[in-house]
Amino acid sequence: MAEESSVKLHGMWASPFALRAKLALKIKGVEYEYIEEDLQNKSELLLQYNPVHKKVPVLVHNGLPVTESMIIIEYIDEAWDEPPYLLPKDPYLRSKHRFWATYLQQVAEILGKALITEGKPSDEMTNEYRNKMDMAEELIKAELFPNGCPSFEDAKPGYLDIVLYSLLGSSDVAEEFFGFRPFNAERYPFLASWIKALKEVPDVKEVTPPKVKVIELLHAMRRSYLQTKA
Figure 1: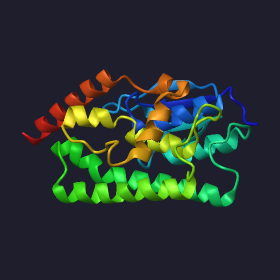
Figure 2 (figure 1 turned 180 degrees about the vertical axis):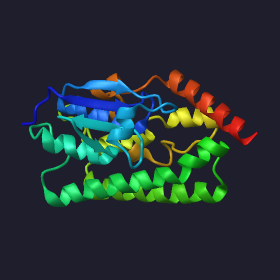
Figure 3 (figure 1 turned 60 degrees about the vertical axis):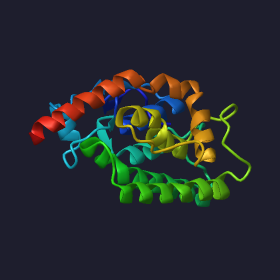
């Protein structure tokens, strides 16, 4: 088992990508030092540890940096190789969880930039997003959870749960701030039930940033963006 005495996480409190790393560490029971980064004035350590993308999160384990949130989740699962496991041990199931996590990330990117910069995606973007989410709703359930929504009463969240929650767990924030509803329970009942179950997990509640603070940050980001365009 990996040493826990020299684990540090460089993150930003509202980052959904840093949230993934926090959740993985929390679920695996890894003690770590958290270092909050000012993304407008990045630390020299962050730039040193992630010279390619210069972004959070960065996990530093025994002085060695690991970057990219989904890679960090896998690293944590492998470095601390005792239960609970974040990825299934079965190779085929593991490949499916990785596939759908990547798929959901790609679908989220369709809207992400447009929401921050323009406040609302085009009709074309919206239709593309919803069609792809329709596929996720149908096929993830059929391939991975034919018996219904995952339960976390006797199990911890894993890799795919973490990625899903980081992308859709704050959809109510997007609706309130942008006036755009990217996700709703009527169209996606399976995914909505899954996210609702995750929101009740104590580990998830503990590391989720407050909604009010996230909305305040989005207002500040919007003002900054508009000023640069003026």
